[in-house]
Image (cartoon, one colour):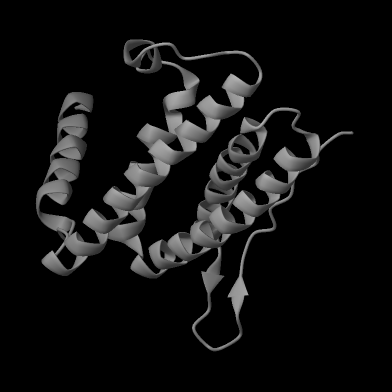
Amino acid sequence: MKCLRRLTVVGVLVAAGLFGIPRPSLAQAVPAAYGLFVGAVGGVYATTGIFVAKARTGAYIYSLEDALVPRWELVPVAVMPIGGLVLGLAEDQRLANSIKWAGAGFVTGAAVGLGIGTLFGERGEAQWAGAIIGSAAGLLAGSIYGALAHDDGEGGGMEGTVLSFQVPF
């Protein structure tokens, strides 16, 4: 009796998976592909920012093989395209918000990073390294905020999650 009940549950789940869940239409494929592409570009840039930050502390990458060894720094390369794909399939407005906020975070982070690199850097590469690190951090923060924020569509503005961080001095 238990075996028959389990087989029935499995059969219902398989039938629901095959017939009950609507498949994505062609109209959903375009934002999904766009989200996948933009997420991949953003993931590569965020990982570049992480590598530049590590290089500023003395941890260098000497070859492409060394860079492609599985490590935590490669997480944005894997996660951001998946996030873009999911946002494109689920809600293309959230994808658009994420891209807009990522762009704003990119520009703001680059300016802040350039300023910090200029103020606290003792060598010439501190300016561009600061700009890359700051823009990568701003891109990550902006894309996450844009994906979490929600526009109610009634002109009331965006409702979102408050993001904050502390820098100890």
